[in-house]
Amino acid sequence: MGGLFHRFRPEGSAGDGPAGEWSIPIPTKGARVRRHRLHLPGSLHLLGSLLLVAATGLFTSGAAPAPAPVEPRPLAQVIPAPASVTEAGPPYRITGTTGIRVGDSPAARAAGEYLADLLRPATGYPLPVTRHGAGGIRLRLAHDGPYGAEGYRLDSGPAGITLTAARPAGLFHGVQTLRQLLPAAVEEDTVQPGPWPVAGGTIRDTPRYPWRGAMLDVARHFFTVDEVKRYVDRLALYKFNKLHLHLSDDQGWRIAVDSWPRLAEYGGSTEVGGGPGGHYTKEQYREIVRYAAARHLEVVPEIDMPGHTHAALASYAELNCDGVAPPLYTGTAVGFSSLCVPKEVTYDFVDDVIRELAALTPGRYLHIGGDEAHSTSHADYARFMERVQPVVARYGKTVVGWHQLTGASPARGALAQYWGLDRTSDEEKAEVAKAARSGTGIILSPADRVYLDMKYDRTTPLGLSWAGYVEVKRSYDWDPGSYLPGVPQDAVRGVEAPLWTETIENSAHIDHMAFPRLPGVAELGWSPAATHDWEDYRTRLAAQAPRWDALGIGYHRSPQVDWPAA
Image 1 (cartoon, rainbow, N blue to C red):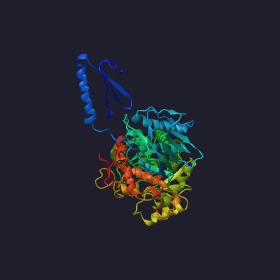
Image 2 (cartoon, one colour):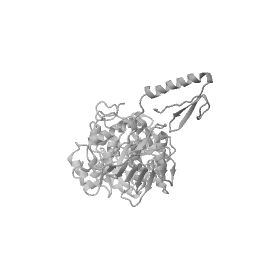
Image 3 (cartoon, helix red, strand yellow):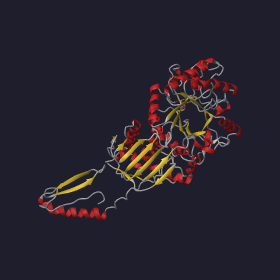
Image 4 (cartoon, rainbow, N blue to C red):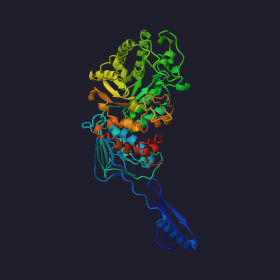
């Protein structure tokens, strides 16, 4: 009877309690039943009976109707959109008896423990992670399957759910899909009433591009390890696989370098606006790398050079052509600083920094910046890049640079990150296209599409607008495969959403600028081009809002999306 009911019996009749006692079972969170007993003296027995009969009328005729059952979310209602969806049959319901089976695979166990940790707080269920059993949720690695490095298959039906992948990253991405298929309340950190249905059917899913990145600028404003981890968790939900950390700029140097200690100690001591700044010790950086790797994100560290180097120049006089260290800088201008290209000490500095950073970074890539070197002549810029790119290779990493690198001579296998605009000159675009046709891979980060620090509109309290206003539709509604004229489709490695932090100071600011645009970038990188449809996407995006509320993500309520009532 609507979740609360009672029964009573006359004195002396058979039942589960002594005469004069009424038993009122009240379901509690987690489907457990707590039984409350009312003890009435004999003289009040008849009165008690009448009172309970009256109460029955309250609960059966005057109470609101029982809530409608929770309908499972359709399998296609996730972000990024899956490659293939087949809806079929009744759902599976996660209950107190559900277990997570992982077999003998350590990778499957890691994914299973991650899933259990996600689900336990809100469901209140034990969700044991076991090697054997039947039914429930099964995670399995099938190394000969058609899933690639990151794909997966999800099968759901009344008997259980099976996630299958060829590699651990695929299992992890499948877990994120399963997470989104559950009601948004699953993100809460206290027990919720449920139920927890997952629609029946099959998802077959593989990513469109191997590079699905997000960049966080920790140089303009410094962010703690915990703040970076928080952003990593946001990225993992939407199947990003690269965390690009912008570790140095004019306003701050954020990573300890043993051979040049003043870089972090002095160069990292401030930030935009003159705040205290900060830097990561080597162990703190390793912790970020470990945390990201556990969520299948590869950290791509960036040391921007030869420009954007004022913090380094302020730390060491010998890096300046005149041998004089300038004072620290806390403004927001760009293009005024440069390492001294002719000096040999510059390349000792570069070698030491890259060697130490490469040793800390297990990933394949190291970003050397290269943008907005306006105070460096073109000849010096080309000379610098010819000297620096082989250093990256010597320490076992692949070069990534901003697309100005294509104006020099990109190393074999290098990647160029394009951040231009629709209005960028045809000559500059042609330079990038020529490099792409010669084997340079392209990462697309057009500033007037996916720069998360751009204002949504003129009323946005944070962010910049030099690239224009970037609303949700503009951020989503373009095709990376055909964006740059003359760039072969197979040269496009993927997409990345940079978040520069001249005006961004804390996690709340990050959330407001990243959401709701970040999931759209994820979909551009993961989902087949045929699935990209703004009207369908904006509906799926609106359905994410309760999940963000449960996660504590303060997002921008764009007028382009029909959000649920606040």
